[in-house]
Image (cartoon, rainbow, N blue to C red; front, side, top):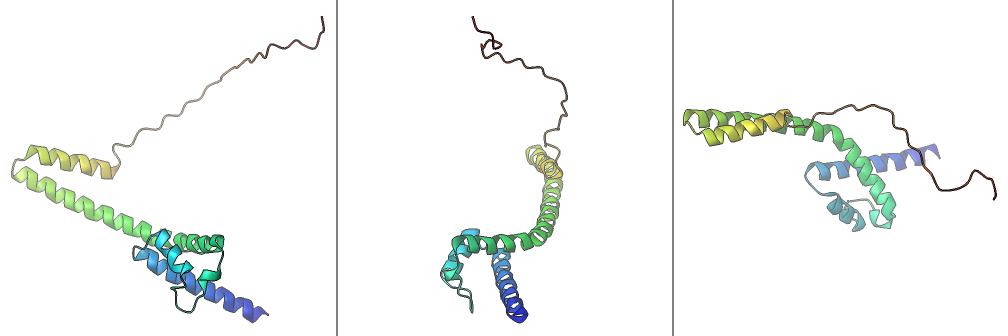
Length: 139
């Protein structure tokens, strides 16, 4: 029986790898779900799965995508920064202050300079609540 469980685990991992490929190629969660409901993954009868089972597979695939998407985000940030620096240089050369200021603002946003500062507030609050009840004494 150990061999059967291993083959089921292997098939699950293979299906999740197919889902990861679709996600990394830009397919939305909704489209992946539809593809599973319509048995569009070769050699997998995913249409017989429960909706919660389908979502579990999709969630597992998204969990595996976090690292590649994080690296992609960093690369995209670097590319955007490079483009904005080119725009800033071009705006300076042509003495276009408006576009230079716009480029500076965008660079600052990418750098996180406009994020609100976090303030740590500590203190003691005393609250008295009166429900209008007597202390148990009857008149």
